[in-house]
Length: 416
Image 1 (cartoon, rainbow, N blue to C red):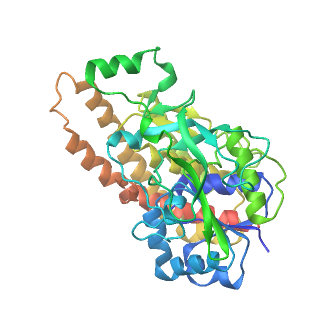
Image 2 (tube, rainbow, N blue to C red; image 1 turned 45 degrees about the vertical axis):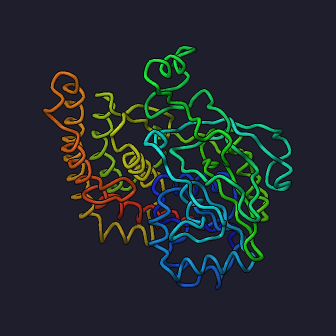
């Protein structure tokens, strides 16, 4: 029996991060699809822990359907454990269309600024709230990563415990592409005096980072911090501890190692993934050459406001995994059946995205002197034709990433 099921659907880069982190920690696991849950997998072959990565809570719920949502509730009600990060946390809430494992709802965004926060935050830990969910070698504070997080609503729902709450920003915290630590002392205060505006993450101060509680005989742990983040020491220790407590299996290590996309695999990748990566590589190079994309970490590109960086990061990660994972069995048959269509989709996307990025670069150049030459609605329409609306992938981007993510899923399943 596997100790951990990991829900794959609608997770993008966050599903890849979650599977990689659990693999690195040495726990027996298996990525699963929503259709398997709807078909009764959790009841036929129960496992101690269901891990739901980040991504779109709405799309996860749609993939599960009513049968899948009820199957997850039945699983936890009967004694299963649910661990959700970001979008996976949002799925478990009592917001419309959610699982309702936790009585809290997702807090609304009151201003667009709240969408742009990322990096590490100082977090206050409360061991007394959940004595078994936090490692004893962490005292009362930690630095935990958030990547464009949602928020839990304020107030304590019935039976909800809060083992961690947000405090101030750490050194790598960013407002979109603006590193907070790069600003001289007093900048926030000056902006507040001059413009009545201060881009500090004060809306997160004191709000829950993690919540936990019981649902029937089982329990849930929900976190808007991505504890599976590579090279985040405090997050890795908490993640390893949670996996041990919720799955019953001891991890082989207590940290999630670095993930460097520049690593070249020892064996040559299959020609199809290698060709897909070759077709798409100029898109990432073009974005970086023109300052629209930049290296944030070895596994994550940062991006200028308005650029669809989340989608580009998910594509980049999926291409890396497809090239570094073995390709045999069902994955090999998938390539034989879908390879030509994937190559055509990659070529169409790469051409369109390169043209779009250059248009964005031109718009930035003209924004002060000739702001109406390339108006924002035109750029939005072009971006959405390529990528779809935020958290609603569509167009050439979806035509490429959907089969690519299916391929990586089959490659990961073949490892087990």
